[in-house]
Length: 459
Image (cartoon, rainbow, N blue to C red; front, side, top):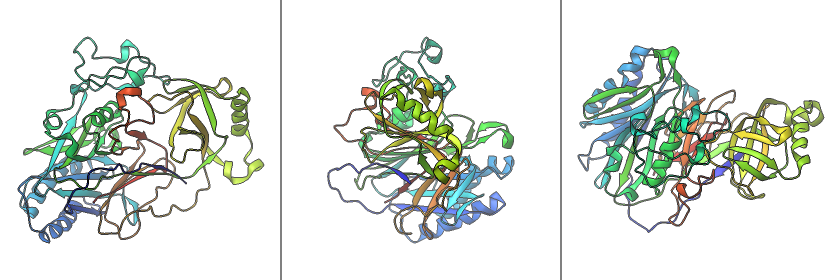
């Protein structure tokens, strides 16, 4: 089992109060009944703590695609009304449709909610980011993901106003014209934002870069929703409500930025990869362009990789009895403990050219180890986390692997989708910014490796 460890970044000490986070879930087959059950759980927790401020609350909702289109379309309005009645204050809704929700008892169909009520000095900022904000659909580009004029669809329509344009050598360095919406631009103190939680379609790369640039001290955590054309005719179903209105988007990013002017603990996501077995040594990348490995150290190593992939399972036992998908574990040094994992999406190992599923740049001198998913995976163990009194956000990647769930008794809001999740920790003050290199090791990361999970414990 591999982990990508994001270490906390030291900050000035400050006093903080425990915030009111409430996780609630229900597996009721009627979505209206599930929403009612979750609302009662939230109302009970709210009554136990006196209200300290009049700022609007927010609720992040994950709903499985097993419900009908009519039920899902009504969810935002129902939750807004029920939570207002139960808590006595307005509550904005953000969320998406997923394959399965995750709880301490496993994965299931149902509804999973995370409610947050800000106290004095805290505030929530719901937002939506879509193509109208200058977001480009970079994943529509082919495997090699080189940047061309065709990918820069806004080039002749508007001038870039951001200061974090990485360059133009590949799509990973395509100039971005994305402008964050006014709800995020209007935050007076970006350093006070400690968490950005969101749901999205598959086009998250430029949004992550913009969030890293605007809120470098914040943890970012997002889930890619389930595709829902056979549920309601939409490519994705992203839920949003604020200022008394409800909306459903089929593309873009919906979420909430959580701000706390009183300071406090930094939030650090923890990522775990399950079931991967190595099929090569750790190899140095000699040449690469964008997301494509062009040459590895010692030409014979590439041929050794091909031999390992073609080797019958009986030669090395069950470890190589794999499902055929190839992944790359990317390391900054040969013996680095922390690593990123991406699926190999194309290329020719015989010629040393392999394309990885990332929109960031690989770097010559970094290292890669090729891996595959074992068919014989052990029963997933409960993920590490804090006690049941501290709610957790738990996202996983479906796709032929069972996803590890939090330990029994934990308060959890979570889901698993085939699209995966996005994550990033607070960036050190003296670290290179995303605009400096566009490297896979800088800024927030997208993950779609089956069986992988990310956990964030809320303080």
